[in-house]
Image (cartoon, rainbow, N blue to C red):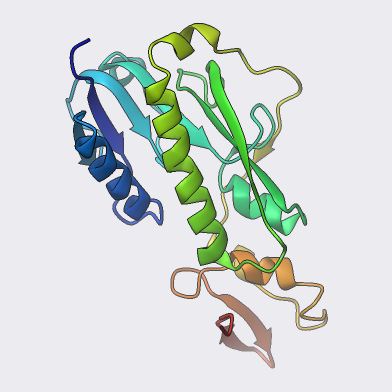
Length: 215
């Protein structure tokens, strides 16, 4: 079989970019033809991985590759939409599913090829659980490629009731000063100290909190 041409699409400002970069290096070492992009281009190829890519693909873009693969951090069809891992941690869940599936014109609705999970102990802050998701994402992409093309014949369409998460914004990092830190610890686990830190208001003044775990 000829060497597969693979493109990886991840915004440079995404936390996932470092893992996409690592994936591109590992795949290159395995003799795949690989390129990593910040934005969609007029590239064509065999397989495109869209990792934490925020835009919906149109039919023309989908036709540029034989397979368009997404890794989403929920048990599709549940948890479609934005920031699924953050929302699930906020809900108190310590098992976060990952679903690798084929992108289609309808969001998060294509054929599912692989599912996996990460397990948390409830203490991980944002960089900790992101690391687990990033590593697992790389492994799932490898698993897909090592099982290709046979795996594409065993994919299944999503089954069950679909649910959606909305997009999180900086306002979602707001703490309630009338609640205890213990009550709001899961919120502190998903804030980003630099991009959307935890904050609260007191006497009409805004205060920012940054959280770190001591080694």
